[in-house]
Length: 319
Image (cartoon, rainbow, N blue to C red; front, side, top):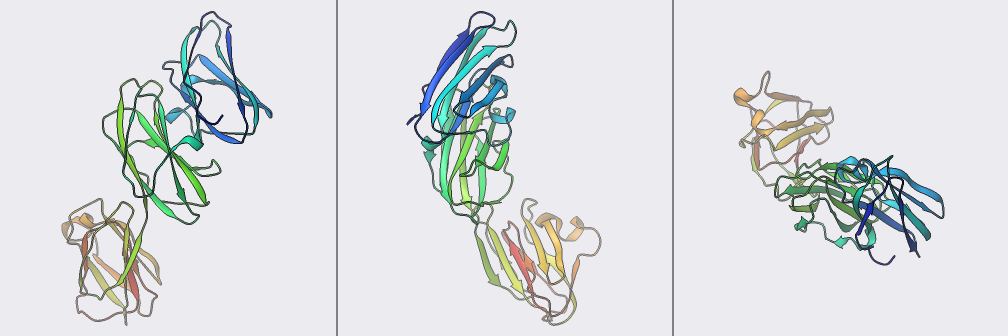
């Protein structure tokens, strides 16, 4: 199977009928079953091969997109296979499916903006990108019209990196654990009939570092989703440090860490000072601590010390 099998259009015409399709793999493959049969909970498929049963009586309606968790792709060894389709009980009706080879996914590069279309709306599009173990990426997706579409990412061994999520719902950065080719699946729900337009990008997460001094106004920018700006500062004696936000955004956050551990975690810029924060605005720092770091997505910020005295070593980082 050097290329994807052509879409299969079949029909169970009489109760008890079983349709069988055969194919041969000369190499080990990762194969994806793309169901394109709406309202098909009573039509099942099974797959047998050299190792015996790979799939047994799985309904067409529970075979991809949000209806199937995990990696979705089947890791198959070389050999002959039989895919059987049958109806439950007296069920009859038409069905459609497509077997996709992950090796034939469209190549993309990290940082590349990809636009595509599911036509029909219940199909699945596959993309692939190369990465190394230890790389951190952020998957940024957009549904360009309102439909029931999901995305997921699996690694070179078929393990799930991102579980199925609604297109347009970003779940944060992920650190990759293997070298090789990763697969992105854009999956239309099996009951979806309208055409779906979408866009996405897999961004490498970058951390930039810079020293600052207390009392300094800091202006920055988040260039790509997941980007972290990290700032270090030092304190020479115990002090209380208020954070003076100059950015009215609740989707940009900051975190402060140091020798005392995490002092502030994922606090939004719009909820960091003035009437938007309850209790004491200041953060108490100990002298001689390792750098404190503030991290999160942001555009500008300032750290202000009431008496402007230098104080131990801390750090701020912002993705």
